[in-house]
Image (cartoon, rainbow, N blue to C red; front, side, top):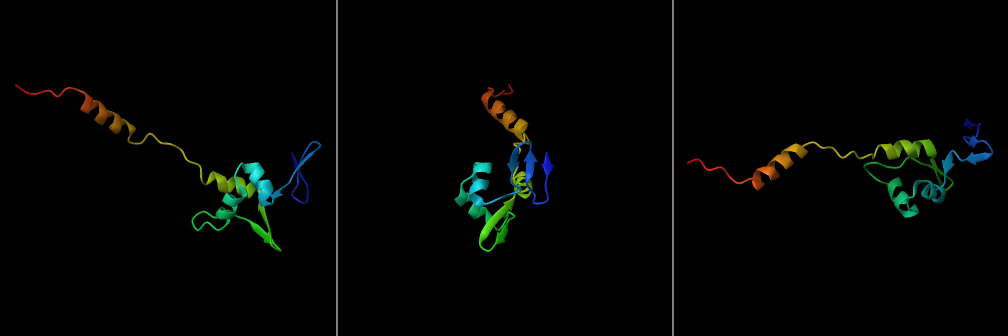
Amino acid sequence: MVQDREGTVMLGDLFEPGYFDLRALAAYSSCSVRWLRDRLVDRVHPLPHYRIEGKILVKREEFDRWLLGSHVVNSADGLSEIVDSVVAHMRPSKRSA
């Protein structure tokens, strides 16, 4: 993979743009253009972009980095306590005689 001066990534005979307009970004990311437009003005986690005479461009590397900021990892914190609680309620209670 080689990057030229314009930011175009060359893969053999193929060219991948370094910048996407929203339609190309939608195809790249499997997200809708409407959803991407909403992310541009998100107050908490806005999508980094460039506006050139009304044309919106998003740098591929910046999009990938931005997307990683939304990575969700399901943690098992508290899972053992939940399992213990459920199992305790399922066991017959021991009554002292």
